[in-house]
Image (cartoon, rainbow, N blue to C red; front, side):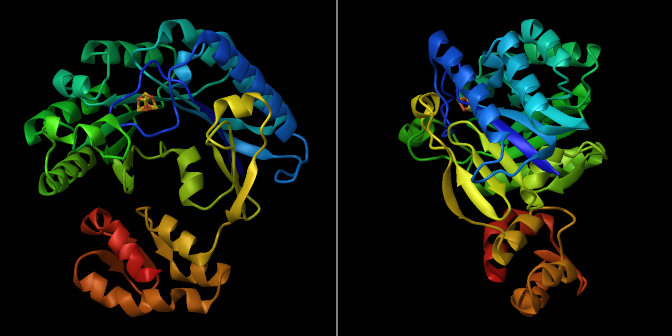
Length: 369
Ligand code: SF4
């Protein structure tokens, strides 16, 4: 089964760390964009250069940007059109990313009617000073209010984003955020380390902020993983934690090299071994720009890289079955040394990164590919 991702490139304001394709726009542009999305969903649901009929999916994910800046009517229209036009399974995981600062009270009835069963909320930090530095407008009280509202309406599958390495963050302030997360009793947490990307406000004004250094960030990552695991969440992917059965089915498709269709400017797809994408140009998309071929994907290197992000790791027999015996030669050669260094667990059949390996994942993966 495949997944469908729909990109909403709009936000109320630009966060100082964000390099995603998103921006603030006028209502008319949003309306034109939603119409263009509906047209593109219709087009892609028919057999085309990249997508064969019927396109079967069991996950649908609205991300951004900030999908919750759209009206309830527009969100309902997008989701129900996708459900209607593609072959969507009955138990489809339907996620919408929401900003707690949006008018969730107004859009929630539409989301429920459209069958949304999972909400991803951008918390980042429960400490107001840190949230302010990140450009986040809502406070802790509002986030609690939104979580309670979702639960009262039957949406228990909630994910919170937490950010590590943000300005002013200390061991104590992260403990406050993690206590908040645990008390909120949500089943899924994504904990990302802040990367200062070129072109962002943080990049330009780096010296104005008090960022924790690399060593401190490693301590924060370990603290986060220890605390969440102790609270019963499974560290199932480098940056993701979930109660059993609440792993993100949609994001797992990326890590499991399954196919997915991305719709909207900047959205990428991987279907039948081909990668294609829409240019990051909303106006172009509104004017009917089509997806363009990127490259052939799904080679052994990519497979190894993605599988090693997961706690369950990589099975050498599967790798050899999908590719050939040569694909595992380098792994077998390097594994004993990396195991000795405490970076991987390896039992001649399955290989997975340790916590220390997660922190050095790029270097470890490079050894294998
Ligand atoms: S809300 Fe999300 S997508 Fe929008 S600017 Fe902030 S981080 Fe970027």
